[in-house]
Every structure is written in structure tokens, then in C-alpha cells.
Image (tube, rainbow, N blue to C red; front, side, top):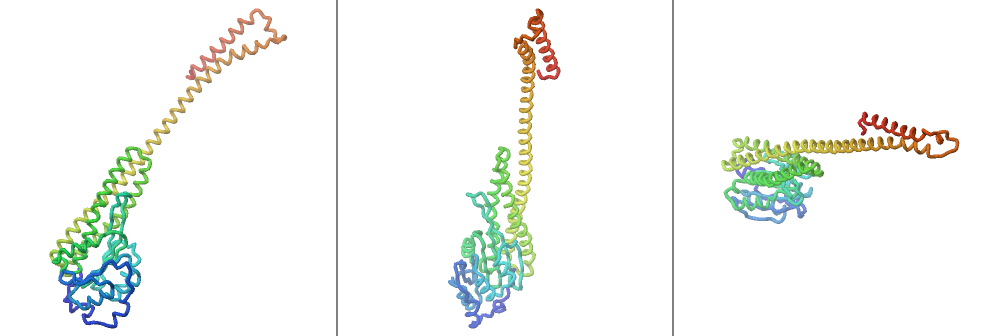
Length: 369
């Protein structure tokens, strides 16, 4: 991790530097400064109210460590910190803009870490992502939080309750933050698992709104993958530097445990995304089958209707023939020669019977009757 050189060999001289105090270090304070605390040998020695006071007290205690927490800081505040702790301008720019991918960068003796925290919102049944930027130096740790997660106050309480661990320096705090971020993934994994189970039930239950829910959860899993996958490589990079930076044995065990947890979480997230892809495929298949069944039912209904129309039309045609003959001979015009024919009635009856029988035979052969 950070270079654990003797305190006298640090970048900043422990002697007071009056010219530095009224300069950029005296930036205006705002509500973005969550808490600034000084520690010595793992115990809190001061809680300055301003950044300028924090700088002054850290100079007065060259063997101490400053832990500064900020939430959506202003540009002036970050530039004040950059001037005091010699932060790289690229890292400061990333911390200001946010929306960064998880990464690990080293600028001299300062480590810059970007983390993506997550929390599960039960009421909305969705995953909320936050962003955390951490600057780790020989005698300071600065956290810049964008979003509600993670709750670093819990990390601070945990570390203060374990002075032996806190006395190991800023890298111990970094590991505790990493652990908090990774532990925060567990409730998210549980919530997503419950959502996946519900979605499976809704898919086979024929819920028409399930496709939108699958799509939204799939997008959240893409974001979750972007948060967890790079973190696996980052932790392995930190472990690779154990020997080079003389990392304490306890911290080594600490980080290996965090790496195991994040690897497990990353695998679960990959599994969720694969499961959602398969569920979406199954849902599309079921929707297609349902549409085919509806079309088949409509076709069958149309066929039955056509059959009925055929029968009605056939009987209408059969009944129309005698009606036509009877109508013609029922007009009783004087100039109709058949009216006074003795065989006219039998002929008309036979003609109607013959036409009806012929039509019946024709329609029967066409399977209309």
C-alpha cells in the first residue's frame, strides 16, 4: 500500500509554514465536509471544524493521521486539499466529475481509489448505486462520496473501536472501506435474488408487465457488473504489492478476505445476468406461444363461423328455389298460359322438389351441409 517511511521523511515538513496557511488551504467551508478527524496511535486526538484547522493540527502532530470525509465537495475544497496534500490534478478532476469506473491509480506516494457502492431499496425494489473516491497518503486519508452509499460513519466507528487496527495507518482505513463496500453488496445480492424469483413466477403466470421489469433489472445488473468486476482486479493488484510496500500481516489477511467476498459477489452477479437473459428468452417464447394460441383460436373461430355461414347459405339457397317458383306463379296475371293448364300444379311441385333436391345433393358433396 502506501510507503510506510519514517514520519520525518514525509513530503511535508513538520515545521510550521505560515505562508501555506492563508493560501489555498484556507478554503471556504461548507456542508460537504462530513467529518475531519486526527488520530495518533489509533486514537482520536482532535476533530477540527474546518479544513484549515485540520491542516494546522496535522502539522503540529507529525506522527498523526488525518481522516477527512467529504460529500459532494466544492471545487474550492478539493483544490484546497490538493494544494495541502499534493494530490494529482487528474485524480482531483475525477473526484470532481464523478461517474468514474472503479479503478486504482498511484501518483507518487498517494493512492487514488474509485469504488462503486450499492444498496437495495426495498420500497422501489431497485438497486441504488453510489460512488466513492479515496485518496490514501502516508499520513492522511480523504474520502469523497457521491451518493448515499456507503455509510462511512459506521466504518469510522468500527475503526475507532479497534485502535490496534487503526494504528496501522491510512491503508488500514482503506481496507476497512473496501470491506464495507463489499459487505454492502450482500443485501443487494439477496434483494436481486428475491426479484429474480418473483420474476420467474410472473413469467409463468403470464404477467404482461414482466418484460419491462426484466429489462430494468438487467440494466441494474450491468451496472452491478461494472462495480464488481474491476474491483476483483484492483484487490489482486493491492495484494501483489504486499511485499513491495511492507503491508502488515493482519492487513494482508484482511484484504484476502475482502477479495474472496468480492469474487463471490461478482460470480453471483454474472449468474443473475445470465439467468435474466434466459428468463427473457423464456418469456419471449411464452409470449409467442400465447400469441400463436390466440391466433389459432381466432382462426378456429373464423373457420367455425364460415362453416355456419355455409350451412345457412345452403339452406337459404334450397329454400329460395321453391319460393321463387311459388312467387312467379302466384302473381295471377291473365296472360300467364300455365295458370289454366291442368298439369301446372303437379309440374310446379315436381319442379320445386327437383331443384331443392339437386341443390341439396350439390351442397352435400361440397360438405356445406
